[in-house]
Amino acid sequence: MFIKDLYCISPQRTFDDTFFENEPKVYYGNRYEALEPAYGKLIPAGLLRRMGKAVRMGVGAGLPLIQRNSDLDGIILGTANGGLEDCLKFLNQIVDYNEGTLTPTNFVQSTPNAVAGNLALMSKNTGYNNTHVHKGLAFEAALLDAILLLEDKKLTSLLVGGIEEISDYNYNIDFLAGSFKTEETDSNLLLHSNTPGTVCGEAAVMFVVEAEKSENSLAEIVDVEQISYADEEKLRAKLTYFLNRNNIQPAEIDALILGFSGDIRNDYWYKWLNQEFFPESAVYSYKNLTGDFPTASAFATWLGVQLLNGKQLPDNTLYAEKSGKPAEKILIYNHHKGVQHGFILLSK
Image (tube, rainbow, N blue to C red):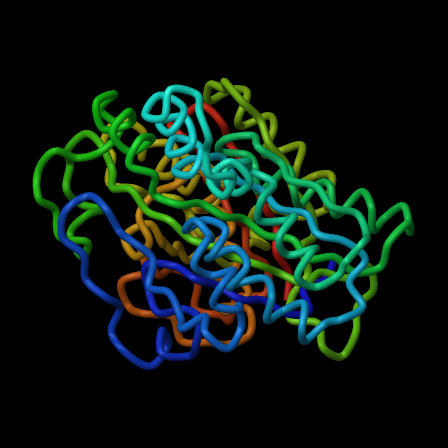
């Protein structure tokens, strides 16, 4: 499966080339909110006013790609909490108005598939349309869905992406559960904070993928694998199986993009995998730029494609420089709360 085009809205200015030209934005605290572009020329004002943040970001990231690639056969997205803020607003209205006359807007925008639905309606795309809601493996599931469809030659090109918003409701639950840091943390120091908890982020990342390689191809998504509730032995077996399935030796992986989040309780997974399998590979991080969220591997994939195409990444993405050669094969590894583990293999 080959990536032809991509777009990213995140807590960094990634919707244009400014991200590669200037120093990354530094955050303090434990909420990294997305820097959004001006949507005025893209989304009609009447629609924009009624959109929740997840829908607004998803449409804002997906619509430019659809306009540039009008022959898409379908839309596949992954999200864990997309539209949750609107869902809670609607439920609160039921209480506030005593189950009387309610505004339909929050109800319509509250479901996880609202982003894919809006993209299809606005672009008049009547093809395959699916949203995967699998917490920390939602984006991996969307990629797997796309790979299966393209390999079966049922479709030739798809829009695939991951969307997440910071919902106050979900943020508060995760904060009370100990997921986020309680102390003020500088994003430049996040990965070396040595304290429990991480920081909350959000993003909308979209890709146009095709079954066949073309002169416009930016990178290849070679394969995707996932496992839940794994210990070191099971994860070792899964990774070995994954590499063998693709006839790749660990030494062939030029770079790793790992989901270090600054949480002392489960960052050891990344250090273990790096030392056990890929001691000579360069290591990149990204959650010190975007915060942590269930579909963060979508941003890691966007970052990996930029690296494969020779873009100079910001210095604070480089966690450990060991490989001196340009990256041609990249392994992305991310886990969600130490429970759900996903691997994405990229190739130049």
